Length: 289
Length: 326
Image (cartoon, rainbow over all chains, first blue to last red):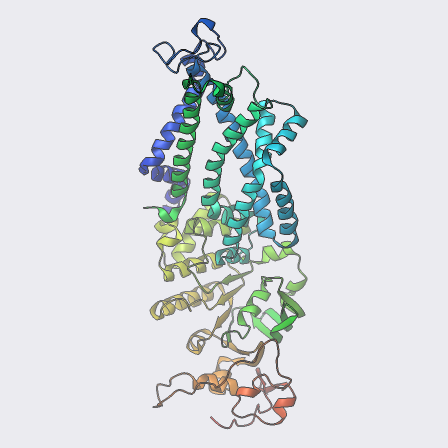
C-alpha cells in the first residue's frame, strides 16, 4: 500500500534537510571547521599527551617550531596542547550557554507573544528590567552567588543573554501569529501548546537560528571576560578567552601566545556561522531547490 | 422529521473599539437541520464572517464580544462550553474552511502531515493508521496520495483549497462552515471545488453553512438561504422562496445586480448608496436609505419579522404585499 511508503518517507524529513545541507558548499565548509575543532577537543589527550599544564621553564616563549607548532607560553607550556584542551571548555561553555538561553528565551518570548495582553506586558516589562542590567554585572553577581565552576559559568552567561533571545522570539512569533493558518489550526481544535510548537515556532526558526549562532561567539567571549576577572575557569585550566587575557602582556614581543587562541575562537565562530546559515536555509522547505 | 443540528437564537455580536460599539451582528436567529446547506448571502461587511466565527467561538476578543443570544449545537449551548470542550468540538464536530487557501496551510509541514495531525488530534489512532487515513482523505479530494510529502507551496491555489477541504472533512464533522471558499479561486476551479464539496457533503451527510456573495453559487448548492444586511437577516427561506419570490427590497435589489440570460438589459441596476455605519445604525429600518420602496414608517420603526409563507421570513413592512418599483 502506498501509505506504507509515505510513512517511511515521512520519517526521513531530517534526511531531506541533510540532503539540502549537503548541497550547500559553504555550510559544509562550516561544518568541516566545526568538526575539526570538536575532534581536536575530543582527542586532545591523544594528540597532545603531555597535557595542558606540563611546564618546561627552559623552553619559555619559544617561537612556533617543529616540536611546539604553536610555540610555548610564559611558563613553557605548549600552546597547541592548551588550545586543544581549551576547546573542550570553550565549546562546552559556548554551546550549553546558548542552548540554555535559547530554550528559556524561546519559552518566555513565545508565551508573551502568543498569549498577549497582560501576560505579554508582565513578561516583557520584566525582560526590560533584566536587559537594563549590565550583562557582565549580572554574570558577576550570579558567579559570586553560586561560586565559580564551569557549570555556574554556563548559567551566568545564559542568564545574561536570555532577554535578547526572548525579544527576538517574541517579535518573530508576533509576525506569524496573525497569519490565517494559525486561525485555521485553532478552528481545527489544536491546543495552544501544539499551535506554538508545531505551527508557530517552526515558522520562526530563521531568526532564532541566526541569533543562536551569533551568540555562541558572544558566549565564548563572555566566558573569557569572566575568566579574566577571575570568576570563570581557574588557572591552569586552559580556556581560550583566559589564554587571550593571560597572554596580552606579551603581545609585543611574543605575539603567538595570543594569536593561536584567537585564531581558534575565530575559526570556531566562523564555522558555526557558516553552518548556522546553511542550516536555516535547509530547514526552510520553501527554498528546497 | 429532520433532526435539528444547529440553532442560533437572537445572537448579537459587538466589536468594542475605543468607546465605539460596532454592532456587527444583531439579533440573528438561524436553524439548520442535519444534512442541509444554508447559504449566508450579503455584501462585504454585512457580518457574515463574524457570525460564522462566533459559532466556533473564534472571535478575536477583544474587540469582539458576544453580547447576547445562544448557539445550540446538538442540544448544547456552545457559548457556555469551556475552552477545553470547545477545542474538542472544533475540527471534530464543526470545522471551518477559510477564504484564502494560500495562507490557511502551515508552510513548514507537508500537506499529508497536516491532515494526519488533524486526525491524531481528535482520534486515538497510531501514526501508521493516521497516515493511511490522511492518504485516503487526500485521494477523496482528488489529489494523488503520492503528494502526501509535498509542501503547500508546491500546490496551486485550487489544489490547496482541496487540501484545506480534506483537512476540514478528515474527522467527519457534523457541520462544515465554508467562508467564501471559492472567492480566491478562478471560475473554472470554483466549479470543481464546489462540486467536490457538495459530493463529499452528501456522502458524509454533513450540514454546511456556505458564506458567499455569489447568488449563482447559492442557487447551485443551497437548501436554505439567509440574506444578511448590516448584521441582520433580512430575508430567510428555502432556495425556492428566495429565488422565486424575493420579498425584501434588498433581495430584489441583489437580483437586479445579476445579468439575466433571458432579458436584454442595457445596464444592470446596482443598489444605490452604502451600507449604514455599523457604529451608528439608524433607528428605523437599516435599509431605509437605499430602499426604493420605502415608506414613512420605515424611518421611525424597525420592521418586525413577518412570515410571508411557511418558513419564509422577511424583515420588512412591505412583506407579503406586491413590491413596487422594480
